[in-house]
Image (cartoon, rainbow over all chains, first blue to last red; front, side, top):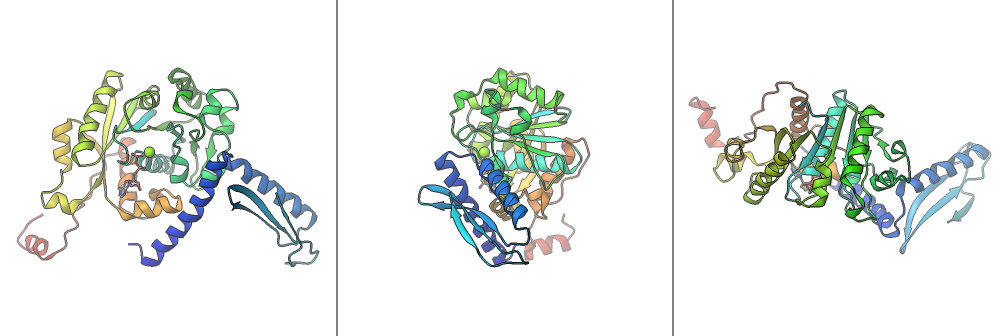
Length: 87
Length: 266
Ligand SMILES: Nc1ncnc2c1ncn2[C@@H]1O[C@H](COP(=O)(O)OP(=O)(O)O)[C@@H](O)[C@H]1O
Ligand SMILES: [Mg+2]
C-alpha cells in the first residue's frame, strides 16, 4: 500500500521527532512547557508586527535545547528578516 | 466489554501493548466514547511518541500522584480525534514513585469527576510492581499475544495473575499474525491460540508495515487506511459489543490458491 516515497518521508519525520524527544529527555525538560513558551512568544511578536513573517523554532545545539527566534521587524506584509535572538 | 477501566498487558515486552492501547483508544474515541489512555511505564515513556503527542507533555502521572499539579493539567487532549486524551508517564522518575492505591484514586477521579467513559492503561512489560500497579484499578483486561512460543507462555502466566486479582473480563488480542505462515502450517492460528489459552480473542491483528509507518509519524493506524488499522477498529467495535465478523486475512493469491478457488475451496 505504501509507496517507497511514503516510507522515506515517514522516516524523515521520525528522525526529526526523535532528535527533539531525545534532546528533551537528556535535558530533562518538559517539552510541552517549551511549546507553550514558543506559542506565547509568537503571540507577543504578532501583537507588535502582525504582518511580519516571524518564526520561533526549537533547536538542539550540542547538549542544549535552545529556542531560536527569527523576528521580522517589517510593517508591510511578508517582511524580510530582522533581528535574531537566542535563549 | 462492560469494563470501563481496561488494562492492556502481555507479560512479554515488544508484543504490541503500546500500539494496541493507542489504536484501541483512538478507535473507541472515534466511535463516540470519551477515552483517556494512561502510560504507566514510568522511566520508559512511549505512548506519547506512538500517539504523536510528545511535544505537548508538561506534567505527568507522577506529578498528579504527588499532588504537584491538578489532574486536568496533566491530561493532554488529542486534537485529531474528539474526546481522546493521554495521561503520560514520567520519564525522569523511577517506578517506585507509583503507589497502586493512589493510582486507583486517580482513575476513579477520571471517571467520576472528569467524565471519561473508558480508561485504557498501557502496562509495562513484566509481572512485577509496574504491572501490578497498572492492573490495580482495572475491571477488564486486553492480553496482547503474538502467535509464538514465549509470548503465548507469558500470556498464560499473565491471565492467571489477572484472574487472581478478580479481573473478570479478560480478552485476547492476537497481534502480528502472518496469514501466509499460518496457511503454510508454520505459525499458530487464532484457533490454536484459543485452544491453548482457553481465552476468546476479541481482536486479530495481522503483521503490517503500516504500523511502523504510522508510529514513525505519530498517528494511530486507525486514523488511516491500513489493514492493521482496520483490524484495531473492528476490535474496538467488538469491545463496544458489536458483532463484527473477522475478515479473511489470507493473502495467498498465488497459483495454488487460484486452483483451490477454482475447485471449490474457500
Ligand atoms: N501488527 C503489527 N505489525 C507490525 N508491527 C507491529 C505490529 N504491532 C506492533 N508492531 C511493532 O512492534 C514493536 C513493539 O510494539 P509495542 O506496541 O511498542 O510493544 P510493547 O508495548 O508490548 O512493548 C513496535 O516497533 C511496533 O511498531
Ligand atoms: Mg510498551
